[in-house]
Image 1 (cartoon, helix red, strand yellow):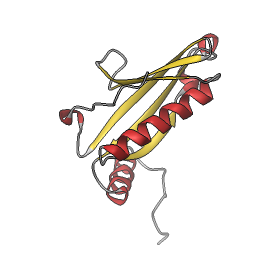
Image 2 (cartoon, rainbow, N blue to C red; image 1 turned 45 degrees about the horizontal axis):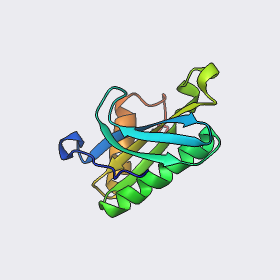
Image 3 (tube, rainbow, N blue to C red; image 1 turned 180 degrees about the horizontal axis):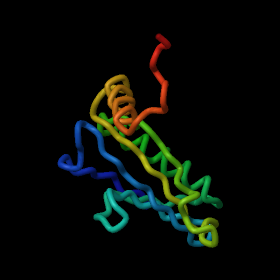
Image 4 (cartoon, rainbow, N blue to C red; image 1 turned 60 degrees about the horizontal axis):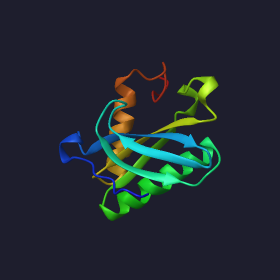
Length: 130
């Protein structure tokens, strides 16, 4: 099964959207669902014949990269959040966060850097000694 990813235009903020891929195993088949929130509407889904959480995360990334290319979007950042899954469930579940954008990579990088600076950079970082 392969369902096209459909991201609502109103989900983008400043040209960016965060999409989560939740994956769960059913034997040698993993269901990978793309959502804006854990309890949100399904944006798309694939079934991946893989054997591990790592392979399911890789399948999710490949799928989202392909979908972004088809939709003239850009996959800006990928974060594997597998360690956020309760340890006793990790062999059957995984989670990946994707930042997808309409804008160029340099624009997005600048925005991400500014956002990190707004969160309070380490003391002295980026400052020259007087």
